[in-house]
Image (cartoon, rainbow, N blue to C red; front, side, top):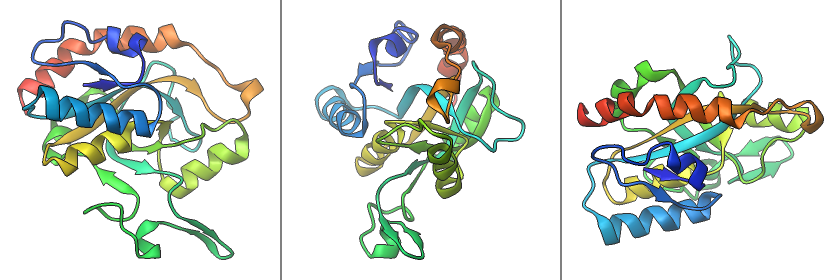
Length: 208
């Protein structure tokens, strides 16, 4: 289980059958930490990216703070080219990132089936720069089709896939996105349901 910061990881300490890794924030730290854990502490049966996320606009109904989201896929947002006729992802440029299509790292189907009862299931965008304006939040949603954004998931799932391991991203909504002065944040309202979801997550992992 890969978390960006200790506050996220603390929600999962003591979870049966799981090793909790604190990676640091961002996709590079996440990829490094996931790789090291697999090589140094494995073997593992599955890899889970877990933490908080920001709700993106356009989700119907809107995601409230504290809602759990399960990624059907984790989408690299930035990789590609801003062309005059629109954004081109890595497959369109002829440089695929992996065995998956474009910038979309799929979650393992069996894990999706196990975890989807925990909350809303849909794409989660992995961003290098979080949305601090209305335009940037709308751009992330329009390009990725995601319901939420975070900063590590695609890198964790990408690394897991490279080593032949099933992976999934599970997050809880801690904030809204868009214009920074208007954003609503409540980390404790996110951490509390994350802690309370741990028995269900353990059951999902044991039943995969």
